[in-house]
Structures are given as structure tokens and as C-alpha cells.
Image (cartoon, rainbow, N blue to C red; front, top):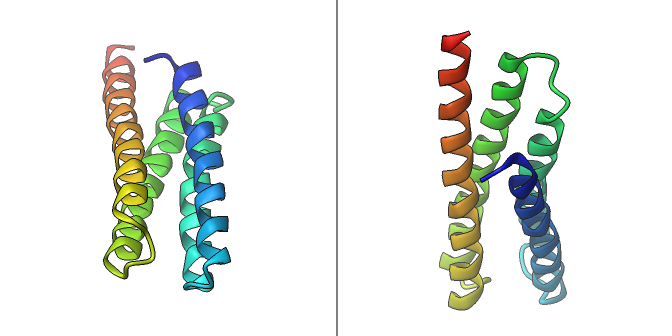
Length: 120
């Protein structure tokens, strides 16, 4: 998957998460903790986007690693919200699948970038 597709996918994930968080807030549930989910989920795309303007390969890899950490945090929060019955099964599964897809793409991109650094 190209970087542009990863940017597009992560931006759509951010939009979807903003809408999901707004819906959860409208239900009057765990507003303070919802903000944690909102921050971590939107940070994924922001770091991927920022990586395209990295000053070096190491900086590029670092930005992707930060995005990956945010992806893991997002995964944690959606699991918590599902277990607390704030997210429906459908909301959880949809969000989890998208988060997992981003995580796998980030891992593959980081692995490839690290191999390219060693060859240089």
C-alpha cells in the first residue's frame, strides 16, 4: 500500500472516530475518557501525514512508530468502551477492524523503511 493510501485510510479513520466519539458523547457516557479515544485515534493519521515531511529516514520511521503506538492505544480504548457496553458489538467490530488494518500497514511500512535504512 502506498503512503498516499495510508494517509487516505488514516484520515477516514479519524473522521469515523470523530463521528463515533460524538455519538458516544450524545449518549451521555464517559465523556472524559471518550476524549482519550478521540486524541489517540486522530493522532494516528496526523503522525502518518507528518512523516511525509520528515527530515530524515530515522525521523520518518519515528513518526510511523508514534502512529503505531497511538493505534495500539486506540485499540485499548475501543476494547474498554465495548466491555463497558458503551460501544455496540457492530461499532466495536467495525472500529477494531479498521484499527487493525492500520496497525498492520504501519508495521509493514516500518519494517520496509528499516530495511531500506540498513541498505543505505
